[in-house]
Length: 213
Ligand SMILES: Cc1cc2nc3c(=O)[nH]c(=O)nc-3n(C[C@H](O)[C@H](O)[C@H](O)COP(=O)(O)O)c2cc1C
Image 1 (cartoon, rainbow, N blue to C red):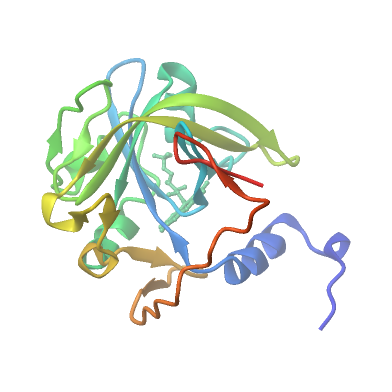
Image 2 (image 1 turned 120 degrees about the vertical axis):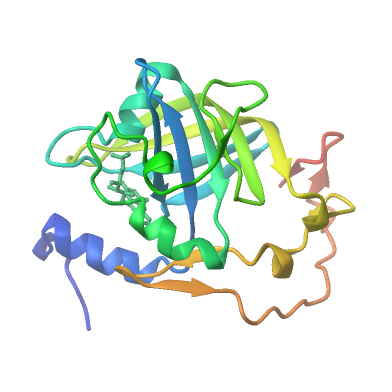
């Protein structure tokens, strides 16, 4: 099968891409509007973009030509929390993506407890084992449908103690939920750990741990 992207409308391209870029981790994002209303929504176009300083990013599409509540809140307040949901939370994650009116706090609506963040105004979810308090780094618009890639500098990591050893996360214990196409979710069931690759002389490790080539 060969597909010329010019033959795809926005929805067809979305369907195709969300089946190709899989599995995607889920950022369950809490924000606060300028009026103080807390918002919760999931975003699986989620990745890390820098380790020094630690920066993560999410892509938020437009809804009927307007910003989704999460994007609007980040534009207004420059802060957000990325909470990492576990496999057993997938159904609540899914429910939280429904289109709630802007004045509705989805966390309250779904019975999820919120805890004050340490350094920023949006609260974090009590139930998730990892939460990242983020200050806005930048917002970059992509394409012609109002899609925005939003990056945030992590100012605080919250990691449940049992998941953390020697600076690393135990993925099996974290048991994260991932999204595949449509309303389908997947779980990490097989982990194959290979021998580490030795750094070649052309690659140097900087003092702060970053790797440059
Ligand atoms: C698991 C999951 C992942 C999602 N990922 C994205 C995404 O990466 N980008 C996006 O714009 N919408 C994504 N959505 C849809 C939003 O969650 C949905 O539009 C939500 O209503 C936005 O809420 P808000 O208006 O409160 O920000 C996803 C939905 C689900 C269930």
